[in-house]
Length: 189
Image 1 (cartoon, rainbow, N blue to C red):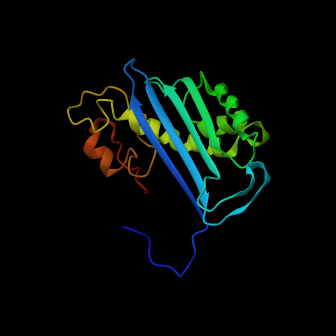
Image 2 (image 1 turned 90 degrees about the vertical axis):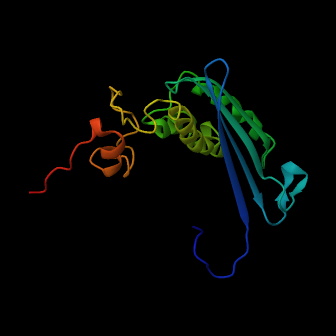
Image 3 (image 1 turned 120 degrees about the horizontal axis):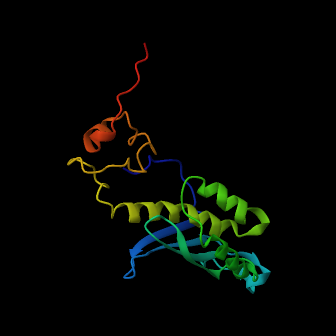
């Protein structure tokens, strides 16, 4: 369902983020993110020849994480094709510091520590958020318990339970699809 109608307006900025997850033949996973920022008008920029034209990328950036089934990062590639400043592409090397880390609880905090502020690139770092979500959706969907445990064969609580309102242990979805891990709501008496 689209958003409701609003007042007349003019588009000024567009950011398109695309993320894809791939199963590799060596058993690892490639998760790629691509971000493009454009503006609907030309504006001055001395590092790009005086102007950045309307609808020309202000940012055009890529990140690829290579992960294993436990979300451990084995390789990283970050590329800046277009940026407002000539030295922006050099920051991509900072992303090698992610090798050996795992996407898990505290991921965003780790990113701020490693590459927040002047240590990294705001836009490439922001791209790691949807990349992490894409990694979760890609890798977890290969698990036998991803669509539920109606046969009762899963022994350990799936890590995605209790991560959102619909997947809470005392909710209908868990009761229906992962009955072994369902916990009735506590009485308010």
